[in-house]
Amino acid sequence: MDVTPAELTLLGLLVERPRHGYELDEVIVERGMREWTEIGFSSIYYLLTKLRDRGLIEEAGERAHGKGRKVFAPTAEGRRVCAQAAEEAIAEPRPVFPPILVGLANQPMIPPDRLRAALARRAETLAVRVTEVRAATPADAPPFVRAIFDHSLAQLAAEQAWLARYQEEMS
Amino acid sequence: MDVTPAELTLLGLLVERPRHGYELDEVIVERGMREWTEIGFSSIYYLLTKLRDRGLIEEAGERAHGKGRKVFAPTAEGRRVCAQAAEEAIAEPRPVFPPILVGLANQPMIPPDRLRAALARRAETLAVRVTEVRAATPADAPPFVRAIFDHSLAQLAAEQAWLARYQEEMS
DNA sequence: AGCAGCTATTCTAGTACTAGAATAGCTTCC
DNA sequence: GGAAGCTATTCTAGTACTAGAATAGCTGCT
Image (tube, each protein chain N blue to C red):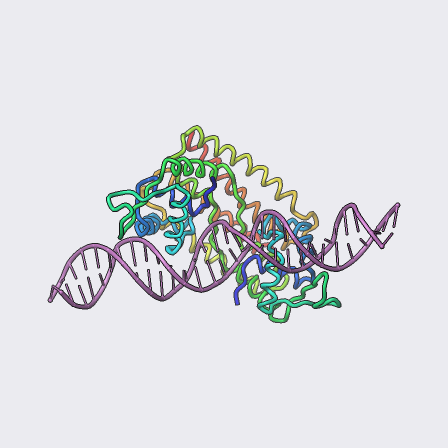
């Protein structure tokens, strides 16, 4: 039984505590999770019904199966799958494909001065992103949460270094 | 006019030289592009018709609009969009969401010894990936191609460093 | 009671692929 | 000429979201 990263994100929040859809979005915002996951508001309900149809979560609480807000809790299977999938996500590095690589492959088509400008613009935006991620890091976060933001910051720093080197090389 | 990274990849190869679908796959394999783009064989024809429907490429060559192999060449508009999109891809860092982050968020659910094992497994696979990317780097690549593989290697190295630090911290 | 303006969910109509099977055309070699 | 086995394209039926509009329920105020 496989879950996508988006499904795992919600499933994890529900294991933590049963919640309803709207609440999930609030938690995602509060914790700055949009910095490291890609879950639009409009996807939440879609994902919830998918998880329910697969028997990983179920409606719970007094108002279960009634109208109005629907609180979901993980099933036993849901908890099992969640732990399993989290372990898997950590153990297995999944390659990721930043669009810049495709851009770089097409460099010869870009006039040199525009290329230099594009690289400079990237350097600026990267610096902004770094401060954003730092700002989004919850202040009193436990080490395992800090690790998430550290990972992002490490990747950003590596890209900054790569970029500086490349800009140097081009001039 | 916006193109996706997948579309830009193919469009770029066609700007370089007109080609047919099957040939595109061969080039992608030869150049080790599967290390830095995500284009399945089955997507190539889908993407080609999409690009053609948008007027960015057209059938060219003697056999144009006939049976058998169909060679596509970029239109003037296609070249323009390609250069534009490449510049954009370089200038604009698009955040990327590696599944490990979602895994890390769910760490408390994983028994400590399994977590340690998962991190160790990741370290191993990461090392393998590094050698793979190195192996896929074309030997006599011009600097702008080398930059692509360097970028990937820099990200991998940063992740290895992050991981080592985190493993240390956990023990 | 009646309405404003939240909170919360559902629905419609997309986009962007993707796996894999089916089909068609080309070449070679007996 | 006809079968083997490539090369090359098309087709079918998915998956995984996603934007945005529509709807429904709830709460407080007058």
